[in-house]
Image 1 (cartoon, rainbow, N blue to C red):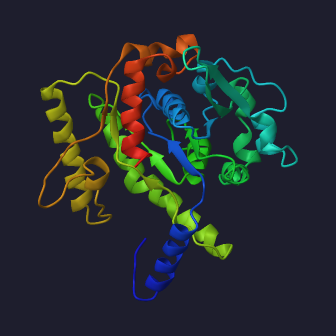
Image 2 (image 1 turned 180 degrees about the vertical axis):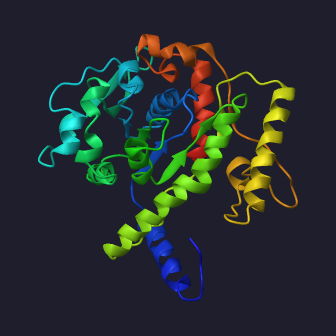
Length: 315
């Protein structure tokens, strides 16, 4: 948000309070307006990796169109359902949480995380936009924030009620992209410079009404997710990214500095254009067939995701 002489003391005080009394949980929306970039795989394996560090993690399947997360873990929701919980304020959200556990024979330890799955067919959710507001998910998750270290929301690839709600509920937005899919890069840029700022404004407005301080969700730098990449392909992707950065910077109607979200290590002194890469690996892509996160059964996959959580979540 814009800092000026009138609000700088208020903002500094709020930041100090957040540092002195940090919330236990970090809520993460995994989002890109382009489908097929590996949001669900990222959500499941990132949660599983954090559980290996003894972090308590909840993941939320908020994509009723696909239900890939729920299906990938072979969860069969009972009653009440997540839909029931969203539309009926008398249902406790803890009643729709399912534990996912895996017992390790080698270490004799149990690893896992909690899941809020979705149920039913797409038609069951057709009227949800008329029954809930975009802050309903946020209010539900607020009741769980002292129970978890991380909450991950698997958001659908569009900008309608479910994806808006997921981003509104988040502290940060993790954006997978593909180096060989220009639309995923363009949609990431749109989310960063248009969608997320719109949600920030809504959150700030709602917080002001409650006499609270809230700056809204922040976009994390993008990463390339699960594709083999030649030097020529990487060069082509970066040429397109540079074009997106230049266009955003030169837009007289809405100037926006995109560079930190694509090249987080770039400085005037060190023009570093490295982008984090999660390499392609068959066991990661095929883990859904076994209904077990790849990081729980494959050493190489675990190493890849350990690098990801260290890059974004475990400093």
